[in-house]
Length: 257
Image 1 (cartoon, helix red, strand yellow):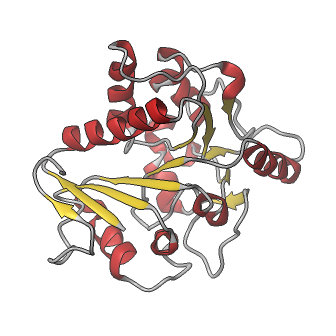
Image 2 (cartoon, one colour):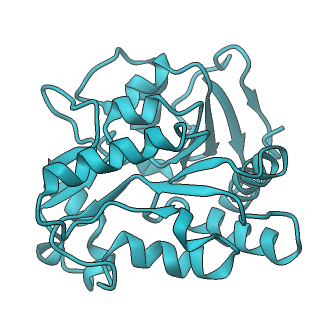
């Protein structure tokens, strides 16, 4: 793992957006795996600004989002598709035909998961997968469990995860769907590069376990240790439990450089 530690979340977001913009400059037809939730909000704001000043061109890029809730459509205020439309898609020059999303309203959710998995394969796989990490160590909606499903699948959400997503549902956890569709850990680990963002002291314990702990299905993020190209972008609070010296190739400074 390559770890970069930043003094502020703004610095972290700028670095993450720069990483995406540089990939698009090198590989205009890059396939991006995108995350939702609070963690990437500032990064998407930076990407909107990068696009506005001509530093990021999405016109030939393709996107696949990690997950979506079951039982709500794309116009629902709590849907991740609506989140992405508002926070990124509507403000940059992405071709609508190149935006890919799981359909939580599909009549056959199993077939929908198979369709999504094949669509990723048909596009040649994901070049850069953007991730957050849940307070319980989940990645996407791959929740801690006795076993993990490798491919895109239907999942029952933990109550902590539903509480963490309550803001999108008027602050009421009981309104958050009980189920979701999610890329599996195997799907995520097939990405050619992974960029995980974590901010705040609430994430520190899971970050520490993901970096140093054993591989365990009880902490899905721990499986990132097996990937050949993982970058962790952390603020000081999320990195508080990491020990010096950091893993080989990591850096620690106010700028993240």
